[in-house]
Image: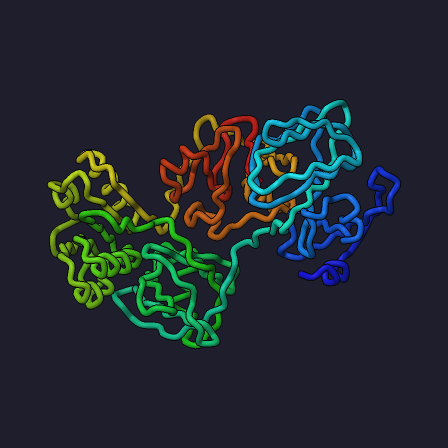
Length: 454
């Protein structure tokens, strides 16, 4: 965005003196989607009067940060060069090992990658403009792609495939096996579907008409038509393939075959060893049979109606070497059994993908109400009973990437700097939770406060 565009988009302004008797600097409020947090911009002429030239250019953005008495930020790094310009109050800015006391009119440049922190001294709030170069951009809800429905095809009882292409014929963005997309349906619903991995430049998903549908799969089956325009998210991958594994075993429960198709194709391309266990209610409900057979990996087929009930997964999984990687996707009963048997067999390399959140209840010590502090901006928000962290953030104008709002897609993963989250999602791995990540759409809090890296 050019500076003249920023100025034209400005909706309000306020002038202040830089503390050295020079011309006032004017900041502007702009709610364009790419702007940072509060959406503040500073006039270039005034910007140059307070910022060293090496930190200036035509592209920059700023945000207003207010930290109350006794408040501070954790030590952190940013990939952008930026400066703290103090409007009011008194405090300290620490850059690597150097500590500087700052007051109104102070300027503290920070190079990209330098560890730094700040804290308030005295009884007055520390108010600063944080000016970024190049601009730090607000992340939109989820970047959307416009696509057209090229083909709808019956794949099995209650299952159709949907092929999506770009309206202008260009290739859609590439993705890795195991990835999924969100469909933004006209009703306002957002539903996640795994990509099957077919022709390059096109997307294909498989959709089961769920008997317990809340409207998503019913819409796709009954109202979506060839030629229809629809919006989707860019692909995301919470179910990555470990391409270097000596051997891989896949368990597909019904429509859970969709992400596994691309994974099997990729391993065959690489000449890696793989096998599939496909579990379905009946042969008629088994989708993508021809595609599976064309891949050419060993397949164990199990049909509940022919074999008198669900499979003995423990027997089917046993006898594998310790370095084997195991993958499963499908309904919760299949995944729960898969995880349980892998644990009993002491398998370590276990990966699952759920299509629906497990619906984990709140922990016994979860707080009905708590505070969320945002480390980057100094804001503190109250999460009220019955409200989610995500909705609280969005209501306060904090832009957070999100998709399904069901703990299923991973779009809203956020780092927790302090506090104890109550994990209720179905997407984070134990390693991600140990690394202090949480999904803010469904998860809660087991402490008085969560400090988030926002």
